[in-house]
Length: 202
Image (tube, rainbow, N blue to C red; front, top):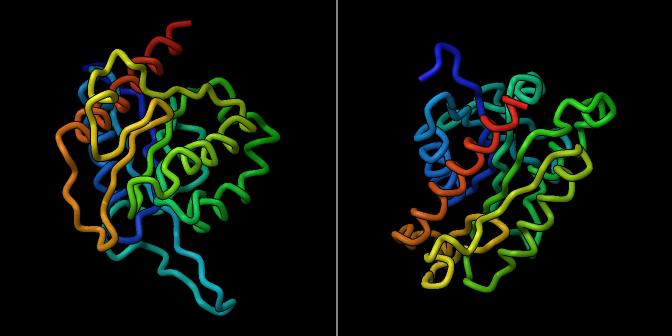
C-alpha cells in the first residue's frame, strides 16, 4: 500500500442498521484496493421538534461528517434508507447545507456511487438511488453504478441494481444481507476506489 493512501468517503445515514451494514461492505471493497482507505461518516438525525438537538459525537458507529472530509476525499459512496422512494430527511438536510462547497467546486470531478436499503423489495430502491445522485451531479461529481459484468445483478432476489448497491431488509429490518448483496456492495466500493486511483493519475 502507498505510504499515504487516498481516502474515500463512505457517507451514510442508517436508522436501524441495514444501511450501515452496506456502508461497511462498501468500505471493505474500497480497502481491498491497494493505495485506498475508507473513511466512514454519518449525519445527525433531524427532528420536527425545533428544540431537539443531537449529541456532538454519536453514541456509536461512525463519527459525523465534516465539510473538511469533502476536501480530503478522492470520492464518495453515499447511502441512505428509503423514505417514500427518496433519501432520508437527515441526508437531504445535510446536502442542503453544502452550498459553499458547491460554489467552490470542492467535489467537482471526483467519482461517486450510491447505495440504499428498503423494508420492501419494491419499496423505492431505484428512485432513492436516483434521488441521491442529484446533489452529487450538481456538485460536478462523476456518477458510477454497477455494470452487468457482475452476474449477481441477474441472479439476485434480495435487491441489487445497476444504479448502485441495495439491500432488502424486510419490514422489521432484520433480514440478513445475502451473498449476492454482499458481493455487489463490495464490488461497488472496489470500483469506486479503482476509479479514484485512475483519476489521481490524470
